[in-house]
Length: 332
Ligand SMILES: Cc1cc2nc3c(=O)[nH]c(=O)nc-3n(C[C@H](O)[C@H](O)[C@H](O)COP(=O)(O)OP(=O)(O)OC[C@H]3O[C@@H](n4cnc5c(N)ncnc54)[C@H](O)[C@@H]3O)c2cc1C
Image 1 (tube, rainbow, N blue to C red):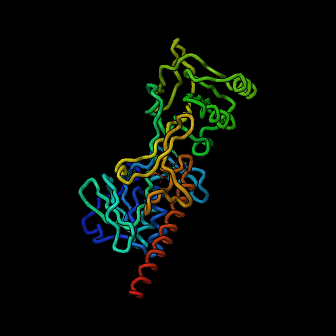
Image 2 (tube, helix red, strand yellow):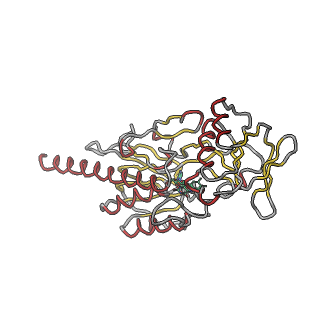
Image 3 (cartoon, rainbow, N blue to C red):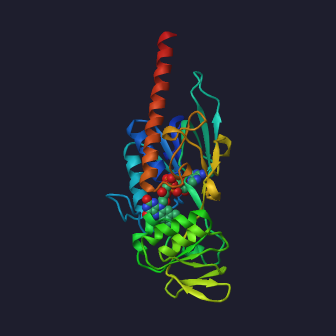
C-alpha cells in the first residue's frame, strides 16, 4: 500500500506526556510534525497509511517535486520528521479524547491506537485528510486515480487532448467541465439526470462541449486496463479514454468523535469538513486541524503549508503555556 509505514516497535512509543500527537501522516501531518520537531517539541505522528492520492502515479503541480510518486514523497517526509527527533508510528487512531487538564489548566489528551498503544499529549493536530465518495456507476471505481480523475491541476496535463467525459454529479461538474475543456477539445458531458440551465447549455455549446442526456449504465474497460468508453441505457458506447468526476469529499473522522470538533457541510452536497480558524485553530482548546480534513480543495502544497502553519502555531501556544507556568513557579 503506498504511503504505508512499517509497523512500530514498543521502544518507539514514548513514555509520559508528549507535546503533540499528530493524527494522520500525509502532507499536512508530516509538515506540521516537522515544524514541531524542529522546535524541539516531542511529537508523535500516527498514520494508518491510506493517503488520499495513493492511486496516483505522481504528485503534480508541486514545484521542485513535480511528478514525485506519492509514497516516495511521504517516505522522505517521515525521514525528515525522524531526523529532528520526531516519532512516526504506523497504525490507526481508534479514539482521541480530552483528559483532565494539568494543575495549571494546560489541556491534556489521550490517544488510543488500534493495537492498544495509548499516548498522552498536550496538543493534537488532526491531519486525517478526506475520503472521496464516487457516484455509483458500475465500472467507475476500478479506474479511480488513473483513468478516472477529479482534478485538472493534479492530472490535467497528463490527459490533455484525450477524449474526456464528465460524469456529472451536480453543480460542481459544470465548473469541472469548463476546466477540463481547457485541456482537450473533445469533451462530452454526461448529465446523469442532473439539471443544466439554458445559460450553461449555451456556454457549453459555445465551447464545443457535447451534452449527453441518456442515462449512463456502465464504464466499459479496454483490454489494457484503461477505459474504452461509457455505456448508455440505449446500449450505445460513447468512446472515452478518460473520465472526470466531482466526488463527494468527506473529512475523515474515524476515532475523532470524542474531541467534539465542529463540522460543516460544503455547498451543493459537495461534502463535509472540520471548521477551523486562523492557522487551523478550532473551538476545542488544544486541537488544530490542517490539510484536506479542513480544506477539501487543498492540494499537496497547500496541505503541507497548512500543516506547517498549524505546527508553528501549536509551538507558539506551547511556548506561551510553558512561560506562564514558569512564571507561576517563580511567584509561588
Ligand atoms: C487521485 C488523486 C490524485 C491527486 N493528485 C494530486 C497531485 O498530483 N498534486 C496535488 O498537489 N494533489 C493531488 N491530490 C490531492 C492530495 O491527495 C491532497 O492534497 C493531499 O493528500 C492532502 O493531504 P492531507 O495530509 O490533508 O491528507 P492525506 O494525504 O489523505 O493524509 C491523511 C493521512 O491520515 C491518515 N489517517 C486518517 N484517519 C486516521 C486515523 N484515524 N488514524 C491514523 N491515521 C489516519 C490516512 O491514512 C492518511 O495517510 C490528489 C488527490 C487524489 C484523490
